[in-house]
Length: 410
Image 1: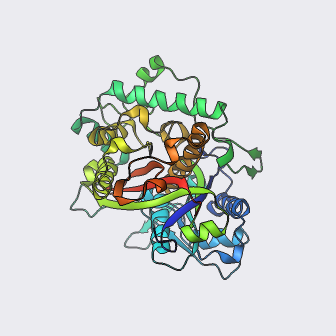
Image 2: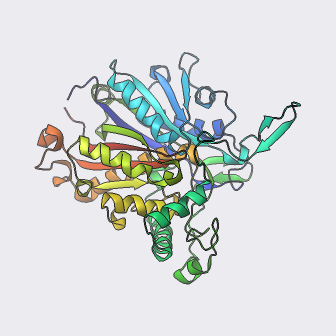
Image 3: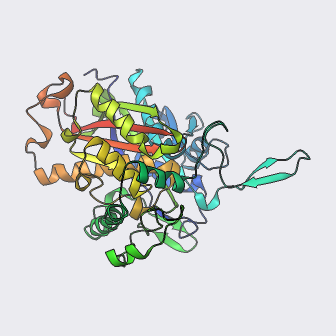
């Protein structure tokens, strides 16, 4: 591997993920993100002036380049620029993908990349009518009028019908997501990745979405939420949330000079488009292309994080990739934690790094970091846990990133 052009993530942090208009309702996007950026710099020892750029995803903010705003709020010098990425739900993951490509272009740069969403403080949106008066709307169109542009819930029901994902499977998967998240929180598996936030109501240190009261009987009582006689309900859908998440991504050589012992080496990224009426299947298509390019089968993946916007689209994508649901989102996902739009893709990567570290500690140096096989022509001593983050995106798209968690020792 070329040390100056191989991207590697050496740190990842996030805020608590909290329901929109809830505990974080007073914090604007820059105030969610700035503590995460400061935490990343403190944990890695990166000097503020050594950051080459801040690349941040955001979907429903008010513009004005929140990446730059948050960087200055975090105390970075004025010499550090910022760029904000909008690929709707995929924004946070695509920001990290963009930063990985900047590293691959050379120069041993250091980048802060991720996503943020404050749905609670998002500005009202309006077009002007012919007289110049505002016409308010809930969301922008994602595709031209010649295409169907369904609301997210309607599209989720369409995916459920097209890919024959039953109501029972959706409810079971959603309930499992809550149970996993509750178990992970109780075991302290989220603790090291969360940056506590100060609010007027006091400190917020943990996610507030997972519901211990849910059970199969209660899940079955939820009525269809979007389509009459549909199978998608409030119980098997995510809820809107506020959150921020980001990573430090740099070259392998620079990571070693910073003293990083391990990290997520970026093997590749893929983004593709699909039928906008079946937008929830986009992640599967992007992931299939990415795995094919590396000569890998889905079964080779050790860790998978998928954004659970709806149980229907999650299961449809996993079925298409022949991935067993029990192998994905081992600590729960957005059905339990919530979907903070532009931040969600970065939350996936944060979770992958935390899980990979935990598995490494559990394996205590066994073959997880030194596998005998070598996909993609890499040396066996360079192979570690294979991990994938994937997300389906409004407008009919999907993004996927493939990583290898490994020791960075020279």
